Amino acid sequence: MHWNRLATSLALAASGAEALLRFSCSQLVVERLDPLVNPGSAPSPHLHQIVGGNAFNITMDPKTPPPSQATCTTCTFADDFSNYWTAVLYFKARNGSYHKVPQKPNSGFEQANSGMTIYYIPYIGNTKSTVTAFKPGFRMLVGNHASRTKEETSQYRQLTYTCLETIMTRTGETLDMPNKPCKVGIMANVRFPTCWDGKNLDSPDHKSHIAYPATGTFENNGPCPATHPVKIPQLFFEVIWDTSKFNDKSLWPTDGSQPFVWSQGDATGFGNHGDYVFGWKDDALQKAMDTNCNINCPQLKTQTIAAGNKCSRAVQVNEKVDGWLDAIPGMSPGMEGMSK
Ligand SMILES: *[C@@H]1O[C@H](CO)[C@@H](O)[C@H](O)[C@H]1NC(C)=O
Ligand SMILES: *[C@@H]1O[C@H](CO)[C@@H](O)[C@H](O)[C@H]1NC(C)=O
Image (cartoon, rainbow, N blue to C red; front, side, top):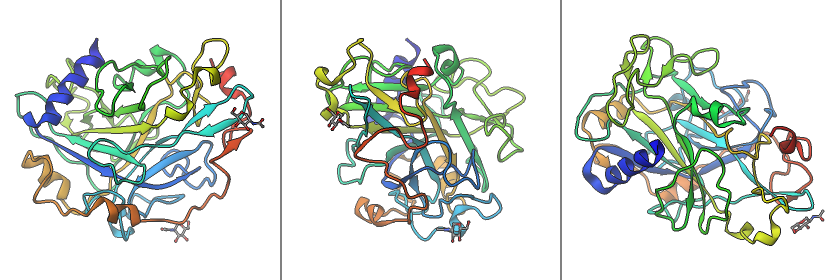
């Protein structure tokens, strides 16, 4: 299947055959804010987990990009003040209560305080190609929190889940939430489109300024469409949800469905989505892409994971998001049942 092939390509890439940046960004905050889709709203409609620079805020003016506002970042590349965020996963118990699923650091980043693994990939395979790094003020969104069908999520091509048997499992990606207990956890994979219109830093739906290759895929070096001719790096998040303490089948719904629900009230998994506000300092990202460095990048300024863990920012929307809850923050109890 399509997504298995992608995973295989990436496994090759991670083994050192290709070029890519792979790094850890620890948790910054978990709260109901979304400066991309709902600027000015505190709270925003649903809960997010956010990593990156501490300039993340209720509103983020594209005219004052993160490097001019942030004083630290949770990422190990110290010049990356971007913000990256996704929804938050909850477990729904048989009695209707919800509990936030903890996050787990990825392989190689065990000291990280939750967060995610970020990749910027200039190309996959043997055909080297050049990419144009994002410009100050650039932002984008992939996926739709309201998607509840395979057809809807397939438009985004590469929003998937990996059922982790071990921390290294990278095969068997699915478009919907795994329907069986996953020993080590569920990894949500969020890959963004790789073509840009070359003009707009954003668009009203935060998606129209970006596109997928006209034919083929990013992975097989398919060309960008004439409307979006500029090839950009493939931005990719891996987010690991440690479902292990909820894996006892006697806790799962009696109707055979799986118990995990995204914070927008989605129990299908098709509403997987990710947000990006570019915030690399100067031309650090372009330099890294041009030199095709692999995983580590000697010319980039780095900091330890421990230093990234220390970067913080005050929570602005105060509400209970952890422990047993009658409803997911911002949602009505049981609403995920209505959206199926
Ligand atoms: C967030 O925005 C508010 C005003 O909207 C401002 O007062 C505050 O300083 C900002 N916080 C950070 C960390 O930038
Ligand atoms: C609901 O079920 C969970 C898991 O069994 C339990 O820990 C929690 O206390 C229960 N909540 C209520 C309100 O009964």
